[in-house]
Length: 450
Image 1 (tube, rainbow, N blue to C red):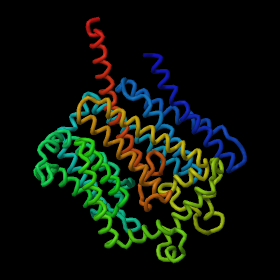
Image 2 (image 1 turned 135 degrees about the horizontal axis):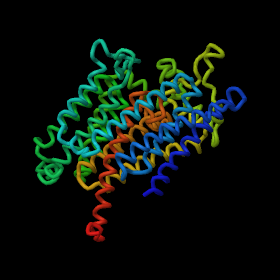
Image 3 (image 1 turned 180 degrees about the vertical axis):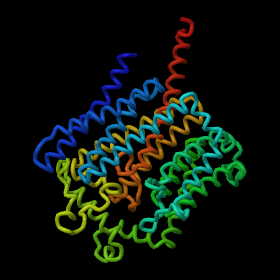
Image 4 (image 1 turned 180 degrees about the horizontal axis):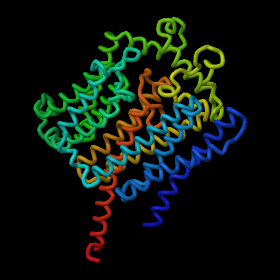
C-alpha cells in the first residue's frame, strides 16, 4: 500500500516539471534569460496537486490513480500558455485552480459516504439545471456578448452557468434511466415494437427538451451540441437500442436546419466554416471568418515541432497598434496557439491526455456495479469528450466553430470549477467500484475469514 501511494505521488511530478520547463521556455523567449522564478512556479504547482493527492488518498483510497495526474498535466498546459499571453490571465487561472481544488475537496468529502444519494434528488437537479441555463437571461445579472447570453455577473464574480448545468443534466439522466431503463426496453409497444409508452419517455423528454430550449434562448450552440450528444449517448448506453440515437440524430438534423434558416449568426458561422478564406464572407462576418482563418494559419505555422513555448506572436497589437493575429487565443483558440508553439506532435500529446481521461472514465463505468454509477461515469466521460471535440473540431475546421472552453486549459473560472467537480464525481464512482471489486475478490479467496 505504501509503495502504491509513493507511485501515485510520483505521477504528479511530471506536471510540476512541465510547469517549470514551460515557464523557463517562456522567459527565455521573452527576455533571453532563464529565471529561478520558473522553479518557484513549478514548486507551487506541485504543492497544490500534492494537496489534492492527499485529499484523494484520505477520502478515496481506492480511486483511480491516473485521473488526477492527467488533469494536472492539462492544467500546466493552460497555466503556461495563458502566462505567455498575459501574466494577469495566468494569475486569474491560478486563483481559479485553487477554487476548483476547494470545490473538488468539498464534493469529495460531502459525498464520500455514498454519492448515490444524488439519485434521490433528480428532480431537484433537473430544476437546478434549467434555472442555471435561464440565469443568463435574467435582468440585472445577464452579460450578453456577441449576441449570446452565456454568463452572469454577481458583483466581482462572472461565471457561465452552463458549465454547472451540464453536471445537473448528466446526474438527472443517469438517475432517471437507472430507474426506468427496463421499462424503456421491455415495454416497447410502438408501431414497430420498439417505442415505449409515452409516459416513460415524457419526463425524460421534458427535462431534456427544456434544457435544449434554454440553450436555444441563450444562443449557446456549442453547449447545445454537447448536451444533445450526452443525452443520446446515455439513452443508447442505458437501453442498448440503436433506435434512440438514430431518431435523435434525425431530430438533430431537422433542428439544425431550422436553426440555420432562422438564425443569421448560424448562417454566418456555417459560411465561414465552408469558406474561411473567402473575402466576401470575411467582409460580411469578419469575426468568424478571420478567427478561423488565422487559427488555421497558426496551426500550419507550428509544423511538426512548433515555434517553442513563448515563440508565437500574441502581442502584435501592443507593438503595432494593429489586430491580434490570433483572436480569442485565451479561450476559443488556445488549441491553435498550442499547436503553433509545440507543433503537431505536442498537440497530439495533448489530445492523447484527453483521450486517456475519457478512457479511464469509461473504464470506471465498466467496473461500477450498479446502473446509476455506470451511467454517471459514462455520462461524465461523454460530456468531457464532447466538450473537447466541439472546440478542437471547430478550431481545426472539422465542424462549424462554436464557443466552448477546452477543459482545464482555456481561461475560465467556471469551467475549471465545474470540471474539478466532474473529476471528483468520477473518482467517487471509481473508489466505490474498485473497493467493491477488491472486497469481492477477498471474499472469493476466503480473505473475509482470515
